[in-house]
Image (cartoon, rainbow over all chains, first blue to last red; front, side, top):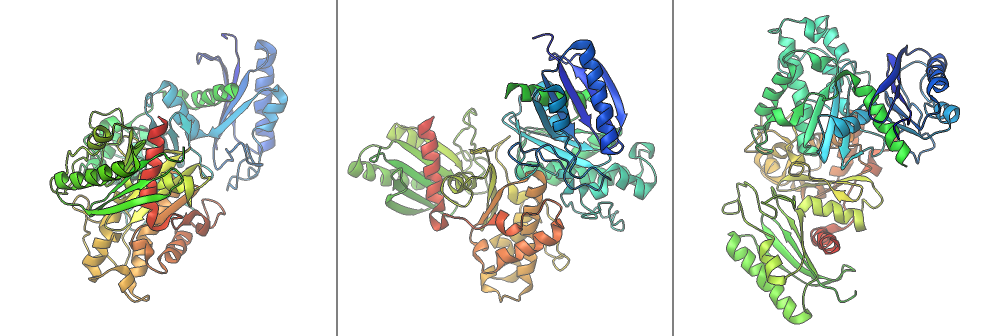
Length: 296
Length: 296
């Protein structure tokens, strides 16, 4: 068991992180590969794992935590392919077959946030939760949902960033950055939406800048929507924007105001929490997918 | 098998419907009991089933589909009790023990909408759906969520009516009827909220009355929120308000406008559908809970 080898890929929109891991989460080697055209990006990733195989032997399974939208339903003929995306060249790219063929082993695949909630449930901040979500607030906003230990996909997979929040009274003029919906949550509270309004990142703005309250007001609405629709036992909020000092406190305060205690006595501080796996969450998510694929 | 007997209770805020059913959904007898104080209401319900037992013999299981909030977690010490409710006298009422003791058989319990999605998944409009919801729009607005054949509860159970929609531009003045949130979805689009603004039911207003578009605008936001957070394969919309002619068509049209095709190609008409079980959905939901309890 201890010499099992897992190929783990965090396939992001700006970088791929490839890692060779053991079952106990030991990382033997990692490499970052800038996300360019699909062909060269996948070729560089394959090369990394071929070199690892030469050193440590064959892989038992691969796990791929991918940017979305991506076809995650194994029963679909599109399984493993990136779906229609504005990212040049990537629509229709098959992420799974190159690794399944090159290394003749099972491959697990999910969205980055689906993988993250699986890993947080296995090892991190969502341990023991029957219904749990992972939300990332960064370049985009996305959310993964886990029920009874399994990532929920439905027709495709959740796209939590595209819910439609109420506008903050001091933020009526900005049209929003989402090419599909304008002022959906991602169009109002993601990193690019913050930069478009205030010219920099949230963490670069003074703590008394109005942006903090506005962003917290929008993110709190995703918490309230999850409470109303899902009643989660744990909501893990991560991503670059969430790392802004004080932001989570502001979200808790907004949630309290909006909910008025209706959904029960549990304080938001115990329900909405930061990730337990920190910066390694991406690779750990891919490992969770690889372990899951190996069990099938 | 064919002479198994199931006690089914639709415990509503205005009436209890009690029914004696066979496994094949044959209804042997039903009775409506107006919901008064808990003591007399439960006594009348017990009497109905005692008379049925005298005629057909003992019960194999009971199923109770209850108004909420209600404790549905079997592991909780409060299991089977109505939680804090504005309904006089009902907070803390134990719905399960009287029937479990009087008839010495398993009892299944869920919310009315939890039971409804179970029944719609078993026999109705949500057959085959891995992720499915049932939404009722009537005296209140509630929603039940089913994943992989099981009703999802989380910390308590979903309270979909208490999501916070965007206000319609022609409906800015009304403060909303919800005692907790004012203008949450239930506070804007439930039967009482409609009556408070326009003095009557939606179906009594002329088809070109502005109310139809406003209510559809709010209900469509629950569809979009479910798509974003859950990606359901089927959303069943029932209840008295939904029976308004033309309302579902207006909801489909609003959903199309709001989503701009982002969540995939499936038309709203195939995703958001009326109930398949009609007026018997309540008792069928209770039967589904009884069958489930009998299997435990």
